[in-house]
Image (tube, rainbow, N blue to C red; front, side, top):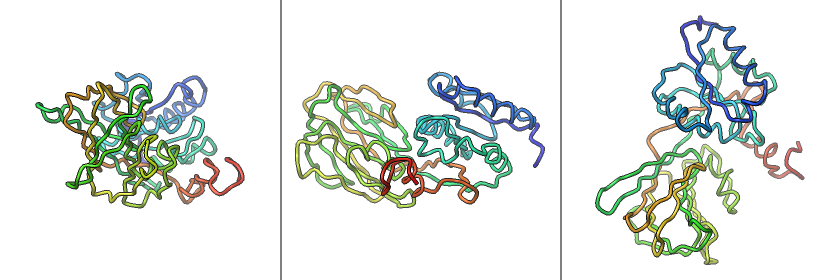
Length: 290
């Protein structure tokens, strides 16, 4: 293995990892390799934002899927592959468990893992007078939703087509990675991560014909909210309260940015379809069965 004494690794971790000895085990292992370590607690927003301005050579996420999502947005700006080790509950996105984690870390540091390029989606909030006033990035999905779980009158437009109206509690646009998350709970399809697609689905629509639709990844979706004072913009679980009357529309599309995930598909790594069976019980009698 090359000399790592002048290299730095960023560790993104959640509360569950912090309260166990596992995080300390990883840090001790990395310190033995003379690596400098920078820690970022993902539940501390200021600390997480500070990671955007710190230089490092490697990035490891220790936690569950939420930790992986938050760390991915921080790391994608630097185009550094992220190694995610599950220390949470489901861990569908992480791909690596605590078993043999040292071997996975060694392979990662030596550049021997496969690199998955995952698409991001972005939302731009257009003010009636000021233009773009807010932007969001997400790995899984971006949605607009009512504040009090009530029906809203929503208009949406695909590319430059006509505007369509629906009464629903919200609208969600997901990537293939997000198809195993929020939109899956809405009854949406599971989409292989390699498929160049986006998925649009209404949240609790008051319309039997309001079915979800798989879109080309090149398509753009615009959304408007009527008859409401406020609504919520949600990006991978992060939420922002938006004043509806000030907003012309919200535009969502595939971002030009990509997140890089380091995966070991050859030596004990978890494939997408195996993860579906192991984590979600896809075509098995119960979740967790083989």
